[in-house]
Length: 535
Image (cartoon, rainbow, N blue to C red; front, side, top):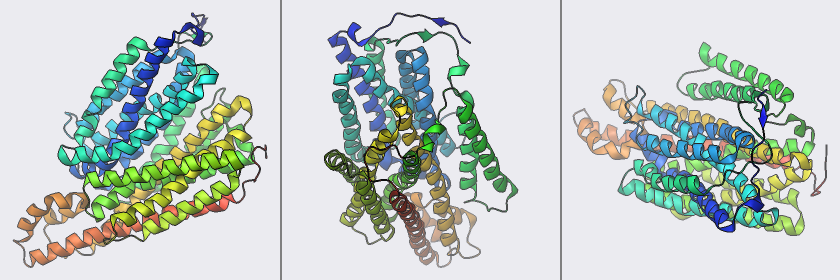
């Protein structure tokens, strides 16, 4: 055990008002850099994946980001409790800043990795910094301000995140169309650098109570962290590779077995850990178990729409990145509207059960409507369908969180609230890997059936990446013109690629609707009371 060394305790009363405002400015600037980058990259990622020939692993950049950010949140939060906030906040911001340059340079980095693999790795590093900053930003508000003031400033941070997601997608699309997807990352770096500088000079090194010096392994659930990665990575690999191979492959069959074995080990470790990542005792409460399952299902559909809505707009309807960003911003507004409305109704009526049933029902209907779209869908129809989903998703999140908090013991409320984000992100991570497999499998089945025997391999490879077709069409017309009936074949394949992409997206959205229909049924079993402890 590391020895405990008392350090000077800096409390709220020891910090001057001006220093608190400057520190708040640094936190706002840093969180803005993080959320703005996430919003900017939404319409840019399809173009980046097209440029790096990564369609076969379309979901992996987002999956990598989600996985590392999920792990970073509890780890950096625990480390900051033990050793102080400032050091780890500065470390997280530095990781974020450096990762922006890595993301922007993906495909051009002098390392022995393909361009898509470079982007996946760079976004994994970006997820570490982003997850840590998100977790620590809201904790720093509690350090800097008295309890009576915290709500106001937490609201400011939430407003900053909301504003970034309203403005960011449109701006990210414009940057992608007029410059390059790379500048979505490079352009955010100056803001991150300014935020890092302000934090270095203004953020007080707050130490709450007695802070450990040295490395206390007993207080950090390192085994749980390792096993969390251990059971997720084989499962994600299996879900990805099955789209390129088949279940009879011995390697693919073995990966789920390894994954479930490590999951069992993870649960055993979490049950015995002094301070686990996941407090399993909470799930003896029936309401928490049900809501956690619903958060997992919500994550699958929520992240599915976030990733595949821009793909539909750009890949099927042929919209620019800028137009795609505008549509996503309107979808985000619908989520915010649903969240705010549900919060107000919950405060006034306490009708939590009715709200979650309505939210799951709306999102199910919205996803069914998305699954029925085709190449003739107008932008108004797209926005309307996405908005129905958004209102439903928005209504669910705050209501679920209140249900969990009301059912949790006061001393475990923070852990219980954190577990809701954990299940939502894990659901999104697994769901995106599954959706990526569906996308690749159905697209390949469709396009392969249209390519006649004897077609040159070079021409066939052009259709491995449907996102790139719009940019390579002039070259394809020249190449196909040299083959017999080449122009007719090219027109058939281009139309087939669009239809194949559309059919895959139909299945993805319909699968998401089925997931939310299951959530709708589970919500029927939630108790109507607002504050019981039903176990």
